[in-house]
Amino acid sequence: MDKKISCGVRPNSSAYRERSHRWLACLVVVFGAVALLLPISAAVAQKDTATSESSASKVSVPSLTGNAESGRRLFVSDGCYECHGNQGQGAATTGPRIAPNPIPMEGIMSYIRRPSGRMPPFSAKLVPDQDVADIYAYLKSVSGPGDVKNVPLFTK
Ligand code: HEC
Image (cartoon, rainbow, N blue to C red; front, side, top):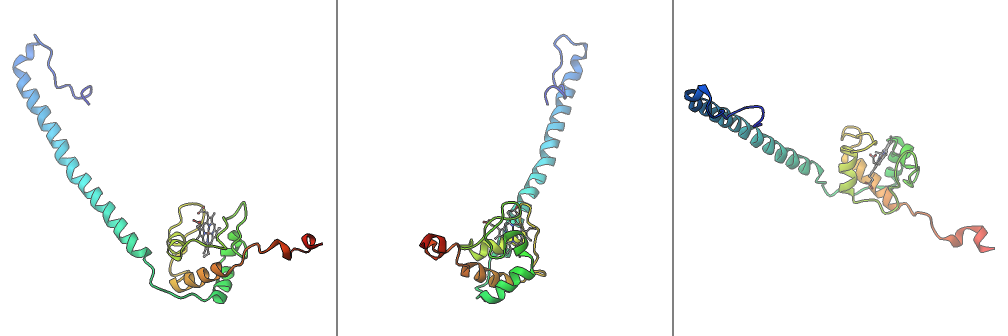
């Protein structure tokens, strides 16, 4: 900044008398910039808190009880299975494992509404809160790989 707005005056300059005026001009510029920037940064800070507050309230989930059977159907009809596999087991190239032991329902709710990666967002219009609760119940009901004793080859 110092390099661009030259506030100094070379000693012995013929414009010695102008020096004080230059300083005044510089002061006005600096104060002007500060006066301009302060409200802007305050507004930005305010906006930040506003959005984080509203997103926090959006995420809060009413205590919904899910139906696992309905969730199993929704998991297919809503297309979750296409990326996460029929049982939420995940697939290397399309989507991570999300069952068994899914993340808490609040986490699923907030992630599907505002995903941060390759997953498309699902609004409440597409997948209402109750449907998310059902899907969560389904993901919780998934049994996972099961016991190796149930694999015939290992019981021989
Ligand atoms: C087009 C593919 C695609 C579809 C459809 C999809 N997902 Fe995803 N999902 C992903 C990917 C990829 C990720 C990993 C993070 C990312 O890139 O967004 C992910 C992440 C998630 C996570 C976060 C996992 C974690 O541990 O943080 C949850 C929960 C989730 N998906 C649930 C769902 C549900 C429920 C549906 C159906 C309503 C769904 N997804 C549909 C691709 C998909």
